[in-house]
Length: 297
Image (tube, rainbow, N blue to C red; front, side, top):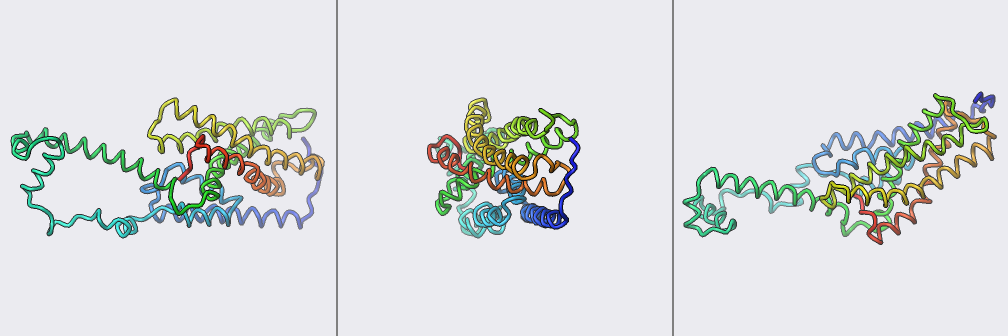
């Protein structure tokens, strides 16, 4: 579609300011996560979720990130869990430690001394691996169900998941429609709504699956179906707000004259994401309180 509308410079400047602010907000959690080596202590799917949402809900996203989502450093973990530190000077003797390990594995202290070194090492490795899996699951559960995090914050972070899928889906869909020139009745808007929704649903299910699976410890089809069920409702509610705003600004305000290659367009999309977050919030509240959707870390 050939856009003839010439945007006033003032609107372009305002749009540029808001988009630049969104870019700055996006960069802040990325730098902090990299600096704190966040991939070692936080749910991996949250690494892209925080920056993506900061691009349109900057102050709120940063507040929730630094309050409830910021990864801990190794030094902070040590101070928070001092009992996990090893104290070799006050521990039991090597023989006592061996007897204790043998008893933990179901053997008597004396029988444990006849265990072959390789068999003993295999048992210890199995216990260590099992412990690592349990610790990872407990860590995700601890982040998701933190007792000091209010329900509204838990729900809002859940909205961030479907918001991330919508942002990525809209970015892919909008530029795909723009590049191909696809249209219905001479307008690319209606094609964009369909394509954006399809891509947003795919990205949203991806984000939701990798939130549910680590929490439940189940990476099979059951978690996938739970992700589809939860994200379909959540993302659809988000898109109702976003698409409604897209129709308002494209049809009602600028009469189809604002194109994908204009700064004003993406500022309006930024606003639409905010509206989508508001329409998705009550649905996520219902999904999370009914335990249909996992609280996100």
